[in-house]
Image (cartoon, rainbow, N blue to C red; front, side):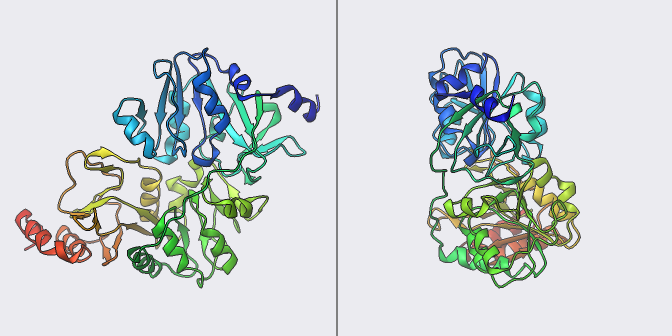
Length: 428
């Protein structure tokens, strides 16, 4: 049977029809963020035949599905704003993970697996592209898995290990709609100062892992005049387009795909998605490759940049909880923090504002509060940056760390932090 006939045979008129092939007790897995199939997900709450199923989602850009939780259990692998509330209301559960481990973890804990994904239209050779995504999906594909694709002509066709052949697909649903886009994030003055400080830690020829948010945007604004940078990251943010256009990025030092930018997912605006479409300078890889500590540590001059919620005097970073309540999850912070520490001339940067709640709370703290999570350990932290400067922690003693961190705390908290540090025996 030729690929055109295979497509026609597997095409379903509606999302409701497409999901009828999901059996009770099957584990349903969707890509993260932009790769989620909106039409197929919207059909799940209407499916009366489901019973004892689990739905695995990560960094969902949608409200929590209104499914019968006695029939379909939702498991998040990285909480969004709606899932934070739902977790404490017992509507969903959270699976702790390092992002790099998810392919193996999902392979281990799921059975009767169904993959539901958004793809670009099929090409002449019968391949669908996962577009903005690769993540954990390719690792989970085998002859025993059920695959339902939601074809969206607005999903960019990208290159890499994110291709699915028509022969592997069980059902096709067409749903052409705009992709989710990042909201506009205004830059605060603190973001610009932090961005400039971090940019000064970067050198021509460095390899960068950088993510989404105001501070990463500020950093990239200050990198346009740099030369010979390589992007080896987990997420492609919007601002990367400007780095390419400025000529700052050559990707010469990428060990997995020389001359190409590698990532496992992207989240930005239509500008980014258009840039990625059929762009051979972009190569999408599974997260067990992009976030593999062994790969990261093999890259000389690897610079990783991640955000945190708070840092204590020891250098322990809590990037997941606020006030002892879960806010997000680990993501790739642990992967890249360890990898940068092991890399020759590697630098790991943790950034945060010095205060929260309009300056009422210091984010440099003596000890992490009860219920806080240690996302990045004290032994893996290198630089910590706030709008008040850069604290070098790697190779520093406890007392040196404590003093360096107090020096970049907000000035109005430094006297109190110093008093507590002396009481703890951390300062003389």
